[in-house]
Length: 271
Ligand SMILES: Nc1ncnc2c1ncn2[C@@H]1O[C@H](COP(=O)(O)OP(=O)(O)OP(=O)(O)O)[C@@H](O)[C@H]1O
Image (cartoon, rainbow, N blue to C red):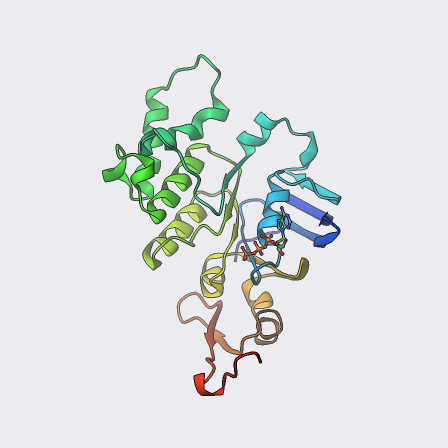
């Protein structure tokens, strides 16, 4: 685990709540995140993972509470300042027509450039390196719209790398990716040496890759801590309604979860 004692806080979230149309979607969320850590946000469908991330990158204005980013109230950043601090890869890959992969990745430079600034050879190197890192070198000139779902996801991650943020927020970054790229992309973002927050459905992947986890259920923070502290049999059973057995992973020592499956003959529809 990363030594958290010497790192300043990247993020401090206190008493964060978001109510929409009289529905309490986030309820009194509170946690701190030391800089340069990788935090996994886990929880069942509808738990509030995306809503929490949206508050953190200021897409949603919370109903109450406070978010401090690198020691400053997030509300006090200008849009441009925020774009130099935070890069976001959203859950749904957006459409970018009339743009090839390289042009899309180059968009990551935008917050760092004035209107009349041209692209330097250093910028080009940064773009080429990011494209290489996500395994899209052979697709760089292809139209973005022609990439597969997983390739689009990787192109958006390359764009975020080019943005050179101090905090990278990824909403389900692995949902379009095969197992090779699930591992490779999370290892890549971890290797950037910046603070990363990612919502992840695969609990074994979250266990293997994250320094700390935040477990949400029905808008509430259920647990926050190391994978071993958060991924317990009891907690997984209560929150995800599945039975499992946990043992230390042979390689990394964090929890390895084996799920128990229902016997199809015992499942009665409607129960
Ligand atoms: N803009 C919105 N308007 C109304 N309800 C919303 C809005 N955004 C989220 N919600 C509701 O808030 C709850 C949490 O949604 P959210 O997308 O944050 O969950 P999630 O944990 O990311 O889910 P999933 O794993 O399915 O992606 C859901 O019940 C959802 O319907």
